[in-house]
Image 1 (tube, helix red, strand yellow):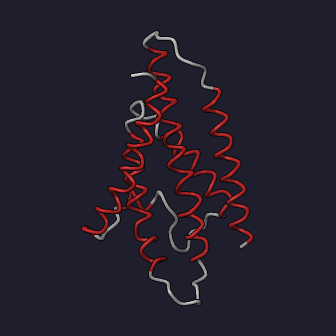
Image 2 (image 1 turned 180 degrees about the horizontal axis):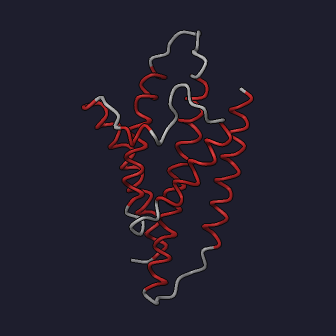
Length: 165
């Protein structure tokens, strides 16, 4: 399989892992401790810009474990952690929002997609390393670093915007 096509395969695995986690949460209704560490907790001491950037960086590097196989696992764990937040925010029908509801909404709408995108980029980079180890020619990975820089900048801007809200 060509390296360029693996990106779409990783994207499919990451998104399916995240969606599967929602379905599992609906049946189990409990979040494992490892999943809770991948998203924000109540009374978190993290400042939004730091949280938004570090989750994306961690996803990029952790998804390279096992030459991209960990990307689906981390997407599943993040989905398990995001599922209760989605359920909680979807239950808010009144105009009186709790203090951390806006932060949770921004985590779901901005940080979670960036986290998943970073997982795909990291998994794709790991395949470049695998192909290079096998002695096969690979296209330059400048595009990956440019996209990762975009993810970092958007994440930092979103974190700054979140801290102002």
